[in-house]
Length: 248
Ligand code: UDP
Image 1 (cartoon, rainbow, N blue to C red):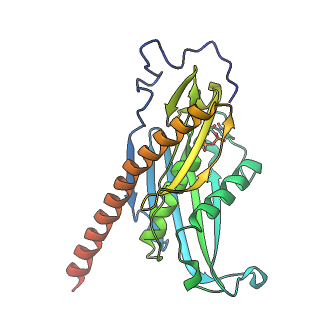
Image 2: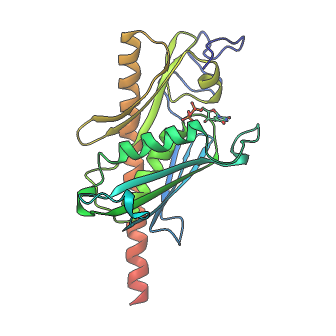
């Protein structure tokens, strides 16, 4: 997020470098239940972002000193593959992946009924296969579908989308160039049934009015993404019913 580039990110007609208008998000694609060996899983594409999420649990939490006697803990690991970006990413955790893992787990704690599973751990793995800005939002979106696919009781599922600012315009769902050279990036995640905000971060600078507009744009996109999440889970459920009927 430098805010300085010779590149025109939004032209005089309000068209962005990838052809979108300022209030248009990238295409969404979600599949639930893509991995056989995880308890729940999901694959999400948001534009050029490609993300896999896998869930294990609830299972007994190890090491035992991490157990909470009143509820399950959610342990999240966000990881960017070395090949996910054009400059090879150094493998292993870094400050950024530790931060994203933490904010993802904290957002999910708002919807997962952890109190049903004292002393347990629910483990969420997010693997970024290809990144093009917005991976924390796509990862959280995938993780909540994977949790639902694992049959873990939840109040709701969480969609997440960013908005931001580039060339002095408020934009929905920033791509990599807009994220790198724009003026602000605001990732947001919501609980759609209540419109409660469970993730709100901000990198860069915006006026209060611009921030209000960014939040409202991102929340609108979250509601659209929520429908795509629900469709993925319905397709997965229909497929399971067919599998059970064929086995009988
Ligand atoms: N990125 C990268 N190398 C890194 C970290 C990030 O190339 O080590 C790119 C990647 O495309 C990522 C984008 O920078 O999606 C924006 O990163 P940010 O930290 O803003 O998180 P995100 O927008 O992915 O949630």
